[in-house]
Length: 621
Image 1 (cartoon, rainbow, N blue to C red):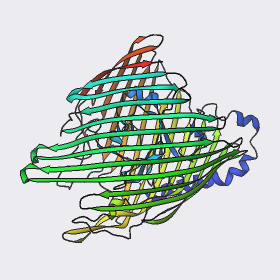
Image 2 (image 1 turned 90 degrees about the vertical axis):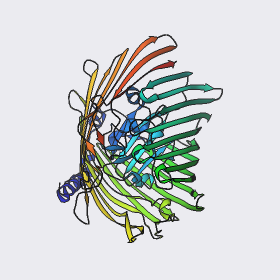
Image 3 (image 1 turned 135 degrees about the vertical axis):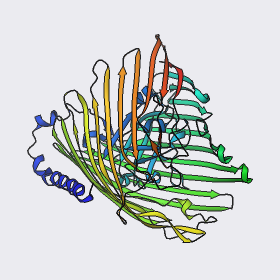
Image 4 (image 1 turned 180 degrees about the horizontal axis):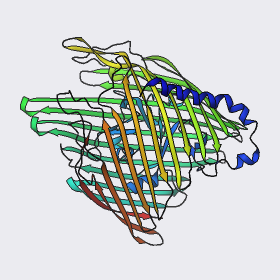
């Protein structure tokens, strides 16, 4: 695929939308406006502009995953859920709870921002977020933006994964679940939700663990989540959340008598106030603090080698946001402030960073049109300033047809670990932001028999990408010399239920190229296929999912970098065995990798072969 035809196509669509918006808006009658969303769900998304807006007015390529979909999968962690999302690649897929990262549309893992309760989960040392140890039981919904989200959120060159957690219910309810599988794969969870005097309270504790599948990728996670809400006055509400996560994982390579262990402890506390001074207006103040300690232990018994590398990430921040909806406008403006520190006790090194930013965006609705301009200015004490503009347009051409397009500029800040001197590494103090110009255009159709047909083309031109550069036979540094292009297309289809069954499918093609050499990037996803079928009745639920990926692996590498010989299929079946007035009980069975195929991005992390787990779930209402 060549860059210019795709880029031209996106710009033509974008210009057609923009130039005809005002003229078209004046010709829309009130009767036409009433029927615009007849075939599309009236659903809001908060991640695009940091305020609720209809999905039909959102120009970004957005995927939403809800709690009932997660429950149907019988998933353990966020990595288990994202594995099945078209356009999102999870690496590696190993033992439940083992560290994992996500890439979007061919980006690097450090370019994807992961957030929960407004708290960034990316660590400061390498900008990575471990999605493998994040439990799913607290998740109300996940909103994924494919492409930069910098005009609203800052450092997020590749995209955004925003976790929106559950809130306390108005009535007391509870749940408990337990599952057990091969290799001692265990998952225990218990939680309660409801009013506790003048406040609402949600609390859950859980444990996930496994001895590990080949090559002995063991994992163990214990976590606690608590959230409280309170209506202080008619126009003033408050919330707070606490998350604690303690995880241990390891990778053993018996052939080399080598073992690598990771022990981490993550905790954050967050809270906020929402005040509505007048109709259509809201002021939100959010504060947060987090701590992330990790210790990497490496040993090679055959060589008598042993090494511990502890580090501590601490981060404190807050935001002040003002939203105002009036007439055709929905304005969002805010300020973000953050200070973080990275401490490496051995050899005794500490780095700090302060970030501050201001942003504003406006969703302007004009009949069938919605235009969203936005801009954000970021500054940090390590790599300077960056301006992130964006412009999105949507057009509801018919009750069954939605067109959208967006252009945006985004960035990712260098991780603090890049400024930490090591034995073979020479620090480059002049590292700058990695940046991207991104364009996407799409069409969404609600055809008879289908809940949605969604097609998207995208182009992400990245420059100033960080790359290793050798400066001597025994040392290297990092410089902003990389220039890459990620372009391609996505097609997602979902049917309406027929005989309690709905089908889904997704196809993604990504052409990743080094713009300096013109060569295709190695060890990146080239195309993926996703297939799903859900069967849902009052007593029986089943979820079947298949995933195939073709890796553009480096066949000249000394060790195989990837292996792929077929679809990986998972099947989950849940049956309700008791349903009383206040209690229900269910049994579930999940078979992973049914046909025992390989889908490995690296020979170090082969896909677990076929394995089975079963469990039970109780719900109090």
